[in-house]
Amino acid sequence: MKARLLVVVTTAAVVASMSAVVAGATPASAASGAASYVVVFKDGRIGAGADAVRAVGGQLGRISKVGVATVSSSNPAFAEELRASGAIAGVAHNAGFVQPALRAAAPPPAGTRTAAEEAAACASLYSVPLSVGPDPLSPCQWDMRIIGASPTGSYAVDRGAGVKVGDLDTGIDLSHPDITPNLDVAESCSFIYASTPTSDPAEQVTPGDCSNKAAVQDLNGHGTHTAGTIASPINGIGVAGVAPEATIVGLKAGTVQGFFFTQSVVDGLVYAGDHGLDVVNMSFFADPWLFNCRNDAEQKAIVQAISRAARYAQQKGVVLVAAAGNEGIDLNHPVVDEISPDFPPDSAVTRPVNNSCIVLPQEVPGVLVVSATGAANLLAWYSTYGKVVDVAAPGGSRFQTPTFDSARGRVLAPYSATASDLAVEAALGRLVQDPNNGAYWAWLNGTSMAAPHVVGVVALIRSEHPTMSVGSVAALVRRTATKMPCPGVLDPGVDFFGAPVQVCSGGIGSNSFFGAGLVNALAAATT
Image (tube, rainbow, N blue to C red; front, side):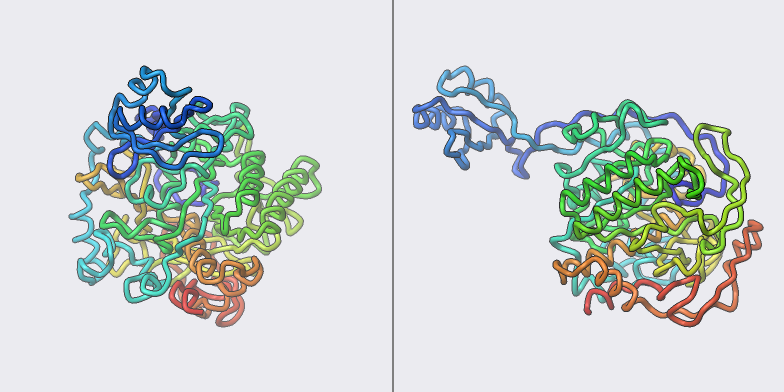
């Protein structure tokens, strides 16, 4: 994965080729196994048409004033037999979708751990019982326990029901059983076009057309992970999210290679505003520039475009949350940009930058900015910081586990079966699979992983206060955060990687590392 995704990669690896082709969407079926249809009756012949429906095994639902009925049937030949009756004008599968089956027929990559063995290892590492949380992999969720998202914490008070959360990311695995119960496929949309650099044909759509739901499928893995942290359901599978009853809407703005270009970001934000989403997660920086300097005409235009789209979404009531970044620098005092532009390939130059240059969408006014911590509540070694930070949240660090663990100090969340790096993650000991359903979870770290925790907390607030303004929601997130002073030590990863030395300024509850403090799900849910 790329740094633009704000997930940290500390091992160089060649990304494997895609393991599967995304299947097209198929008609939805009810839980009983009955398929849903729309039946168009002939003018003046509704009675005869209804009799024909029943004769071939259909159950009539609502009949509209224009003679169109909703019908369910378990008869696999229902449509063909009804057409053959000659009693109706037309019949078609209803406009719904079921998730395509997991495309993981091949054995999992070497090094993949089973969910049962992973839960046992986590219980030992973190000194918690296997029954510590509501789902099988809950022993691994140190991150949820730290912010008060647990059966005795926020889950007992508020689970985010009724809230629509947009995940502006690389898409979502449409078949993952630890996400799909809360996934609104109908609202989800890809904003990746044929003109989008680095895009794959499977994820491309015509601008303005959201009918191709298969294009939302996550070919990268990042979006599935962030979505799961926000709203994995409590369902006896895998993990639980911060807001396990919130509705997830996939807003695909990142390509298979992890690039988020301006048009896709703009279109996703406008869509979020138009569709009345409550909050949107943004765990990326907008490519191709890390810093966009206003004295450059092209970069100034990018600032204008994304700022305008973000402002539109905010005016429509959308709370925007962004990951601070993984450069380990003080964002209020930038000095140099060494990675821009990151597209086209090999075009980056080292250039001086200053406060007239901003990171997008992090430095758009009103966006909640999130730094990352590890299990020891230290700022993660990679986390960008500064007075721009509103709150901190768990992003993971392998150096902050009770005993060193190269994988389990990260954040565990669902991962896409069509992610291009499954073999890499497995080889590093970061991939987990439940053999009962073939689904994957992965250990990742980065401010990408921190921001979704805050998004989940926003969902809890919006569930309790649905009409609360954008500014008031942000203020409540900050006010209910657990106050944190500047620490006396740094994450050992700073020395290990030779990362920039992080310098904290400010007092408890208002400093450059943690902002107003560590986000607190229970406090936010009960205020």
